[in-house]
Length: 415
Image 1 (cartoon, rainbow, N blue to C red):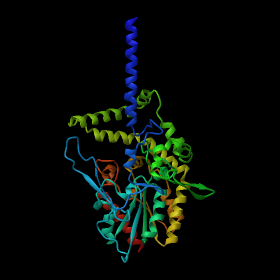
Image 2 (cartoon, rainbow, N blue to C red):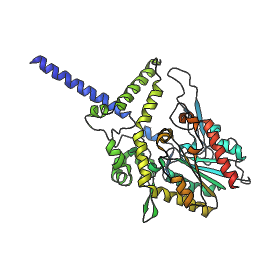
Image 3 (cartoon, helix red, strand yellow):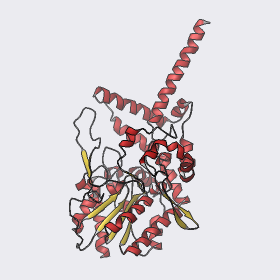
Image 4 (spheres, rainbow, N blue to C red):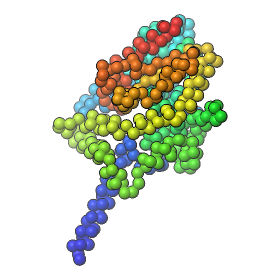
């Protein structure tokens, strides 16, 4: 009897240990949500320096940050640190040319992190190269994780302070998901500080729903806003709930071989950090990145479906951009760029946004459109267009220079 009890006890201890390990592994898995309301403490809140009550978050003026792109192995000297600098307007610094109200042509850009040009230095952004091409300052009002909605909101707030002849709105296809979001965590698990306003369509007209967070301190008790967040964020029902892990966590971990691979690579990377030595024969960072790209495929297909079901909201935001341009007297240009996860998927399946660009060309005579995928081939190797390491999937300096040439042609042809 005693050996039997000991055996049962050992099995229970092993099961509990495996559950804990599985939960920790799923916590680090970008395709799984382990908690609806992860804790936010004051230390984390203090690091949220970009909070903005109106937009949710925004790059702050007169800042300089340095970011390690991860372009090194454990124990190696850091080889690539990029600098992000903003001026007094909150625009990323344009080192090629100072502002000049009397310039022959003036340009500003709004959009997401691809507009901001993450993972490259201030003098490697497409705005820097565009300023050289056009011999004029190019303002950069990109915001990390912005959708078309926030880009439009920032444009309306900023433009009266800096009027320009041309306004480029530059976003990725993930905008279709971002314009349906109020709390990013419901679609980008772990992005728990990002609460934002959004637009809805009522009787064909845009209605703005303000962010439920009026002060940064409100983020400390997000659970009290649960009803509002769930009601207004489309992804709560359609993405978060289907990917919300529950006990037994071991079953969720073992349900997908990619989850197991990701956990093993994470463990290997942690071992490299602790020992200061790389595991021979395998680049764990690269292997983990490739696994995460494969794990992203369901999200890309989800976004593809959103272009079918919510194109009317996306189109209404474009119409608002065009109407605002007409009201203010600037030339509007809409630019679609590609995240790496979309580029690899679309190379096989075609653009997830379908005939969006052709439709916009047909509907709006005053709108210039640029589908950057048609200009950037990468010689058949889409990965070559992006930085090799780091946060993953932003364009390289060489690609930014090509983008600048395409956008310069838009301005020169128009003029």
